[in-house]
Length: 375
Image (cartoon, rainbow, N blue to C red; front, side, top):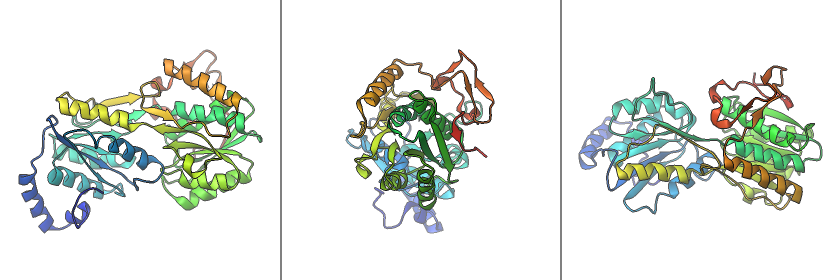
């Protein structure tokens, strides 16, 4: 973390003496309005900043702001999704003068970020996810996210060309809508190459649980999966375990190619630098910050890892052609005729649902060909 205190922010806020210190600090470091020639921006991560995954992707985005004149970046990592994150936000505001705070983890939003929005109405808060609703949430809050399902579809295209067993695998944390979309997208990308390919999914039940992630990866390989991807906070364990068993891997969140240079095919990455610079530009200019921000590959919110050495020419050609179509806009991963893996029709012939039009909160199914259950 970047703050120069002997105690952590959370420890500092645990005592009444610290509370008094905060009162003094508030006078020394007044809370800034969301417009100024200079500004302090806070970032909070649920895990380590070098996790080769979700937190690293956000930290790389934050790092892109550090060279901007007048912008001070403060960060804290390994903050649990509990009242601790409220204490961290409060100290960033009172001690550092943060006028814009990014609590990046899914569980930070409600009740934690919302409580801070009410307590500090002059501070702007933006959360990574899809939960901000104008009808019920404050205007100094907001959300941002990217259409990364298209990246998982491209992962699937390369996986479809690479698999010999026609079985691919997915290690997933929890069956929330975005995870389900990523699983579906991965298989549908592979099936654009070979409609007989199936995808086995194993849910670990947690965003970060190394032992279960290793067990799930080994189980997938044991069942014949020879290309594996995931949606967990840090793909490091999945990538290293899969490669160690001789399987190929597709990454997620950040670039994991250094972990398995010969087995890494490509990966769906976040490009949060683009998003954070957009917010900071508005902040410094005094322009109202958007409350609902979304973008995909064409907008630069998402990017793909470079294709690895094991990717053959046919895969490269289809990958490039599909990416070019996505860059035009309106690409539909979910299109009919399509059934769920329980036999329910989710898209009829001629129906197409671009990711920009999908109501993610309503996605509660896995498509035909996914071996696994949301239950």
